[in-house]
Amino acid sequence: MAKRTHKRNGEKLGVAIGLAVLFGVAGTGHAGDRFTLTLNGEGVKDSKTGLVWEQAPDKEFDVWSASVARCATKTVGGQKGWRAPTKDELATLIDPDRNDPSLPEGHPFANIRSDIFWSSTPHPTDDILAYYVSFFTGKVISDQKSQTRRMWCVLGKK
Image 1 (cartoon, rainbow, N blue to C red):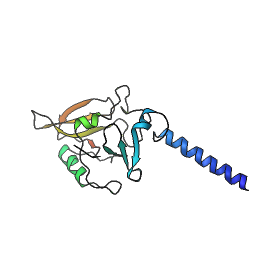
Image 2 (image 1 turned 90 degrees about the vertical axis):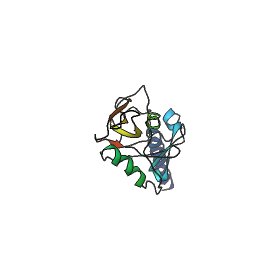
Image 3 (image 1 turned 45 degrees about the vertical axis):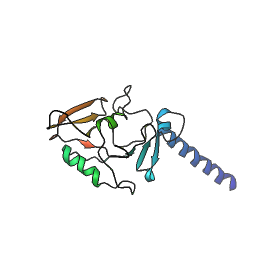
Image 4 (image 1 turned 120 degrees about the vertical axis):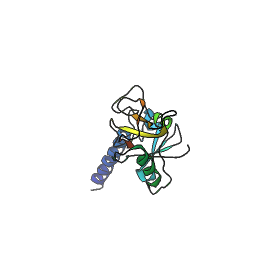
């Protein structure tokens, strides 16, 4: 019986290690070295920037002003103080060699795929425009604030 229990524990460990490598939270891959799950798995710390991102941004589409405001009211992983990221902060997540999504291979994020996410950055000369990042193409683009997009909230310095 002890042998059988040992085998099951070994199988569980093997499965756990396999899942960790698959989701980029362990192993030797670049994304695994860069991203660490935090806040009970609801946040992802980016060692490149020091920012903490939502592990799974909500799927709500909204206009720019409502999306920016929603971040300020969020509690993720028991943590308050979330905000909308700048276009430059969102762009740090982009892997220019990948698309659909334009994220590093092995990243631990969910609910991303090829969606478009607002940034907090308004256009400098046209007050009806703001910037967003397409995680299909990896491009930073401006569009009318009245368009509906998703928001990927961040915690940390601005």
